[in-house]
Structure formats: structure tokens, C-alpha cells
Image (cartoon, rainbow, N blue to C red):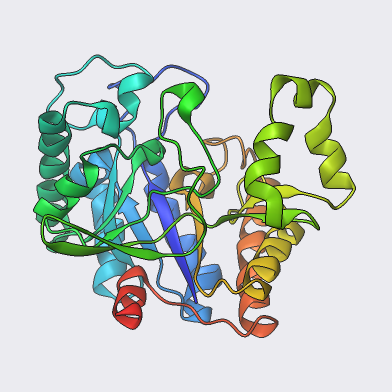
Length: 315
């Protein structure tokens, strides 16, 4: 089974500091393109996890609400704390990870965003993905208290600690249930895994390759070219189709039954992310998504589900 989760957000320069003034959402108008070119024909129902600027901009929320009402997508929640009220914290990299905020402020921001989405779409969201994957020690309790059923924030085999973010090094690619505040929630990890002949030892070997000495000696590149070890993420952003097919094939052969494809909404409009700078990039981007979905269905024998359909199936 494969789900698609789209980080649906405002436009901003990823190389510049975070700013509360970056609230433009013009790229939301480009999202139906993927449905017209790919999703509708394959019966794919992606989940757009939307943040506060998207939820509170009528033109942007109307595009996604129409898709939802037509049964062509689901809408969840994506919290970028620097553009989500209440604006009580300093805007910096540490505070850009929601889980680093005081628990009361994290709750207040997510509560405000949840209500904004419910007001703009007519449906209360139950799927959550933290902006910058920024889960914290109290996030699960906050999600449970606000009625969420699915979290999609964990990035297996990955640590963001160098940037003051969470450490997911001990997590693998498989979904799992967790219980908090008397509620049972499903974790749907961002599909990230190891490929290569040494993938079984990837959890121990990959961090060693990424040390300053390992990078100086170019060990990651050597291990990749030799077919020994790669860490790949199932996204068309920064990867080519062959990478995604290899990751999907490897994970399915190793027993993984649930995958999730992810990308950022601004990538569907040229000039807003490093991955899609012009029309040619956009065509390659769409072809990569379509190629992976066809490969998953026709070669690996997979099926497509929305996030809520997946939760119901796993129950």
C-alpha cells in the first residue's frame, strides 16, 4: 500500500531565515495539475497537510476544499510555528521545531490551526505532520487531546539534532500504533530506508560514513557507487525515478508493506523550491511521481490508499 502526503505551505526562500511575513500561497493554485495529469487516472487520493497561511487564505483553501469535496484528496494539518498564532516565541531555527516550544504554546498553536482548517474546509482534520518534522516530548499528548488519529512526522534513520531538531535514528520504516491520553494513534513514517548490500547494517554504518572524517574521505559517495549503502527517501525532491524505484523495490522485498511518498506543494510551481526551477524541471518532477506510482502498481503489485483508508485497513 502507498499513501501520498503533501506538505502544503506558504512560499519562502529555503536559504533565508524564517519570517512571519512570508505568507503567500499562490502555488496552491497549481496543485490540481497533479490530479489532472496523474492522480485521477490512477485513483490516488493524496493527503494535503496544510498550514496556517493556506488554511486562512480563502483562494488557497478553496482549491483544496473543492478537491476534498469531490473525493479527490484529504486535508490534514501541517504546523509551521513561525507563521501560526499565537506569536509569542522568537522566530529562529530552534523554535522552528514545534516540539521545542513550551507545551502550552505548542498546544495553543495547533489548536488555533486545527480550528482554522475546520472553519475553512468544513471538516476537522485528523492527520498531522509537524513542520520540519519537529515532534517533541509533548506533541503526542497534544495530538490526542485535539482528536488526531494519524501522525506522519517521523523520518526513520535520520537525526536533526545538529539543527536542534529531533532524533529519529532508532526508528524504522514500518507504521506502528501508539497510545497516549487514552487514544490510539497511528504513526505513518516518512518512507526513508537503506539500499545496498550492507543495508542490514545501515543503522550503524551510515552515521559513521557521515562523520566529518567520513565526508573528508568521501566515504558516502564511495559506498553508494560500490552498491554498498545508500540512504534514500521516497520523494521526487532531490531524487530521480531510478532511486525511488530501487528504494520501493528493496523495502517491499524486505517485508515493508506500507510506503508513503512525500513532497512540498510549492514544488508544483517552478521557481519556488530548489527542485523545480523551470518548466522542464516540473515535467521531470511529474514524470518521476507518475513513474513511481506505475512501477509500484504494475511491477510491485501495490495499491494506493489515502491516510484514513490506511488507518481503517490496519485496524
